[in-house]
Image (cartoon, rainbow, N blue to C red):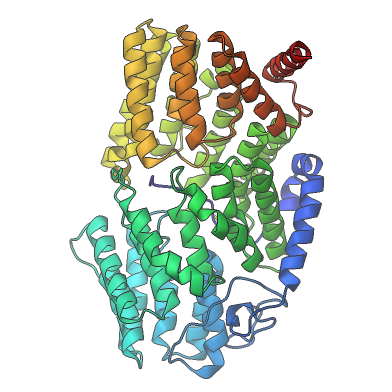
Length: 588
């Protein structure tokens, strides 16, 4: 699994009023209406008796404004703790918020519990876990210090049960100040949670938190998917018994968020948005599987519903407005794959306005999300240009100077691909040189671990391939791109990414080797089904190889995915329609 970065919730602000989002309104009005209807329906569904975290109007520790609104759905949690009975429902809600990665709501929920019951050790544990964003990022020194304070407070009022004390001990060991690096800490934490899960197999949340720790403990250079499979071994039996627990369902999706495992996460993906319809990130998460499986309309519906959940949360004076940046990332990608080009362009424009608004907010200077703004500002135009195969525009993109070096790497990678396609070897070499200089800066910083990860190895191999292609060195071009593709096939491509094996097909096709190109496109489509460029270029390769039947199948699949190209003027769809039409005429 790659190190993955997500956008999170921030201090409430009216995103709709700030940006208007005219593009989304025009592009997805129908989908939004459908999704809002589905969201309303899921909110009103009957709830299990044990769904304490779902209970309408469940009391919080003090009956404050943090009490959940009627019909709130975060998933079903029943966490046994020895705190005051009056805070039990609030504690369940806090754990559900942790499982849904709604950390900006979980932290104040647990802080409220501390005020109502200062002796509740597990509330301090909850605050510390709210600061610990596993699989998203590694905690900063400031976060470690704050979380350690909470764990000291928890230990000052020992919990009444051994099980609770083991939860506290596992987290305390992670946050305790010493010389261990992150990897040693997270592996120790995962081992402790595994022991806790083993001693209390009926504690579904212990199992869920153990599985999450296993995913977080995967090193950046691991290519085995061992941690994902181990997590699934923990989660599958729990899902049978506790299908509405948000942690179980959520972490199954994350464990399966790689091409070779994606199909195993489809049941969880179909279910998560139903049980946790109030959580913007929860409603978004099914798209991780839908995207992997080429289920573009399901992905679109999921993201539009997530954005609606963000707006609904904001209307309730809750955080959530920036979850939609991550949803927009998936939304634009799905629109591009399904040929809804105007919708994709509208999202691109809307995101730029949203980022302007967020960056201007006065209370964002010390928020952990601020580092993600340059990332999204860079990423959206990059992937729009690459997917639309607009090499000139992509090659002209400039890195965001104030962005962290690991974010600037993305722009240099994209420029090298574009310059390779444009047969500009000197510019492509310059892109690689700039990339390597930035990589040196990454190695000197707090995120040095990224420099040794599989993502960097894949990206550099892709860049070397396009440089060789631009320099008319076909042997080296194929060699480097095959290295990238083979490694990417092992670990899985990013959620919104260009398959290296598809690029290998592109190189072979340009080298007039259509049969070899077709084989690579077919492999790429097995791992990344339904991609627009993969289907079209597979059709081109089959056509050039004289296999008109196969070409017709690929073009027909492309036309099916794009509703016969109704919403796109791309020349690829013009060619596909003409070819399929001629095949039909020939068969009559």
